[in-house]
Length: 334
Image (cartoon, rainbow, N blue to C red; front, side):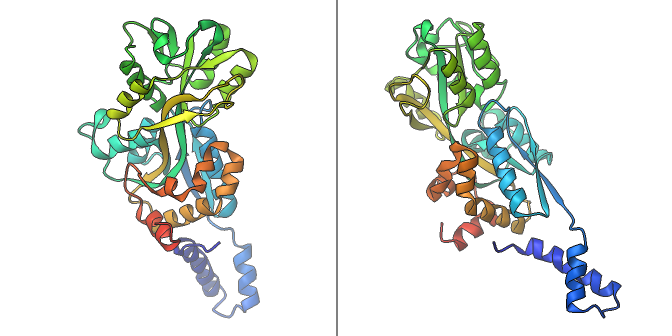
């Protein structure tokens, strides 16, 4: 792999120090030995993800793994959170260096809309899209529900408070006539919600994540369950007011016992950084991810979409970081 100038400059600096220390008389072999024996400084970066029950956390872990293995001088730490909203704030405040952000949240953050009114994050930039999140609703067969609107009056887990899963669930439920006044909407993580559904303290769980969602799949293996769908009219209305949402289908067989395709919607999840991150550093990170698409797919199935460069680079909610844009152009991908 061809490394960027950011890392070359570090090696050059170490070489210079070694020459000075030896009175500029170090032989080429001795210089090589000195450089190899010198402990390389480690640059530590943090990537913001979400709770471990969904897709963001394992995707963040996969991204960290391929970068750590490719660049010994770099260490990527993983930070769990409530997801996109928290990750945007973390990028803004410098608490994280990279963040996984749902495209709808990134779109609003960049433009100062909805939750970000009066506080636009104009410095938000994209490295590229990394996976696609589907709106998944699951309930036990015994509930008798077929569509999401059948959850009226039930006990429903919409996702962690103020997470993208929570926000997208409430948007969709509003369209189908469900709100907190006529239905018990409760904040659970996808994993804890699936456990509560199995135990009988919930009637349905929502997850906005890559498919299959592990905790939902595990639940459906233990208890007969059904994925709930939206009508075409409901999906069209959901998409009408949310430009980053995309019509989608959860294919039959994705979950145990699922015999039919399920109509739903989804949204891209984007790896984001701050515009002031070093251009060579972002170039290097982008090149590693591009080179590692097969490894990333092996590490987490939801990242298979990264093999499609159009998915990665087009229709993004915020501009590409200059380092990422330069890589894609150099590689002939833009």
